[in-house]
Amino acid sequence: MTPKNQLGFATRCVHAGQEPDPTTGAVSVDNTYKNTAGSGFQFAISYGLNLGGGFSIGPTLIYRDVKYKKQSLDTPTGTPYAASSTVSTPVDGELKPMITLVYRF
Image: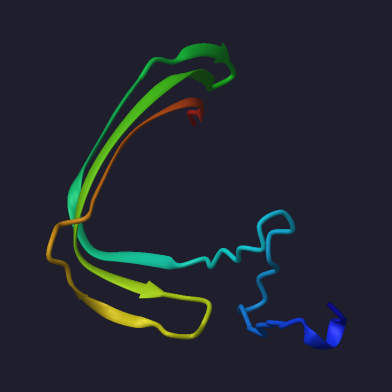
């Protein structure tokens, strides 16, 4: 079979500046979700060790629980969706450990 008899396929696409993965050829698109109209609470508990001179340091645990009423989507291809009410409530609940440095004056 000569090269003239072979079928060839090609695809040319624009992917918003994203380069394809060299191993798979897949292009990942970054979508950005923005949640608004949120309500909830945050709780923090910490323990401080006095270092002197008004400084203290210690571990802190922060728990946050927020429920959002509206969500919008922005894609790199330029097709934004305006903020609209959601069918199911997006919830952001997390527990974060931190090290806190405090200066008291």
